[in-house]
Image 1 (tube, rainbow, N blue to C red):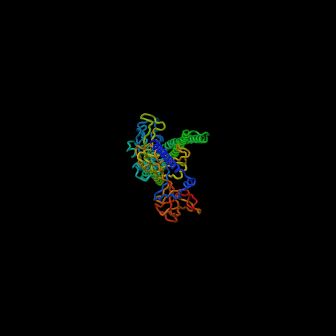
Image 2 (image 1 turned 60 degrees about the horizontal axis):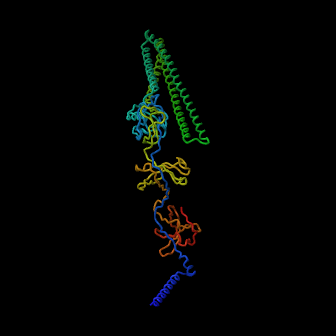
Image 3 (image 1 turned 60 degrees about the vertical axis):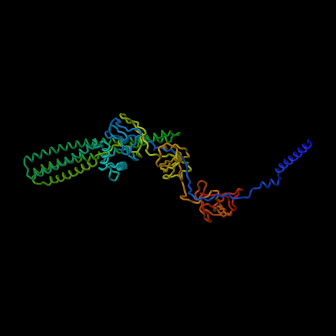
Length: 578
């Protein structure tokens, strides 16, 4: 029994050894077998289908959605009554929205209105004023519905009536005649009265002469001579005084202009010195110097206008006084002629000539009064209007309150319209133009909001950006309130095929020895054919292709490579596309 058991164990051991030997033997390969297994597989093509789609090359950037830039408001000039203290009598509240023609602040009971315009209100506007600033005012009055004519550069009765209607609707008294205007009108009325009197006297003298002389008539004619001579003396005295006052006004205007020009020269020199300084001053200091130059230029412009007005007033005063003296002299001449006629008798021709002269003077005096009635009337003080480039605006800050004194800026406003401030790299600057449409991504929904590029800086590095970034400003369509203040993704399509085109991967294109561009199409049976193409727009790894020789349609399989890494036979292996 033990012997049989031993035999069975030996047999089991032999079988186990044989199995182990077979297992390891099956895992042993010869060098030839290993080399055969290492050979590469049969080469095959890597293909991609031709697609039909729109290609678009985009510039991607980001930007912030904010309101328009803030602007500080200050008085543009003096008010109508030129008060010594600019006391605020009414002010609007922060976060108010001010539209064109509305009051921003009230000073000593007078309004300060806001109008849309690029030209600052640098002078008072009166009847007879002419220039681009008058055109700008009439255009604003037309937009508000007060001016029904065609805006031009001259202030006439229609302009004054429109300004008066605007003030009255706002609840304020329009500005009327100044003291100088009243004096001018009074002098003109006096000239008319004097001419009427001279004519009446001449006509009465003719009647007396024609009826025959008498002792009483001769005595009356002598008294008239004395009265006429007294009137002439008074006219000459009044003329000297009026001319002196007008000349003094001219001298004062010359001094004021000289001082303004000196201030401008000083401000310009300081600005030039600062610009040439090394190191240069800070942007704040340079901005203050530039503001000083602008203010000095405005003062020179205002002083020049005042001098022109003073010279005009002097010339008009001289002419008016000369007319009054001529009337008085004519009265003396008429009185003497009347007495001579009474004493000599029959010849009435001199007095008739005086009557004709008196009539001509009366016509001229009345025409002058009519002209002044047209020229003088409602006017607009520089301090009661502030022109800003865009309205309506939001009130961000009010630095004055009722009872306070205005000194400098009284309010800061910002545009009520949203703007998107962004930038692009300097290398993309030539591809970006104002008026281009963009897409703004809503970060909450992913929806695209349309917009338009409204501003592009003339060089990189402005608006606080790095030297390789160019500032742009975008006007978006309606923006959800929750997006205000957000930083958003902006897509600017700089070029597009405009419609669906055939497109292939750039790797499918090759350049031949003669410079042509080709690609290879693998047909369903595995054969290759070459198609000569014209490449177009390249975007997103795809290139627009237009077949020149050979057929190419959507879905064709184009070769982009080989499994073994080789390139199509007969090509250089380079790719091209625009």
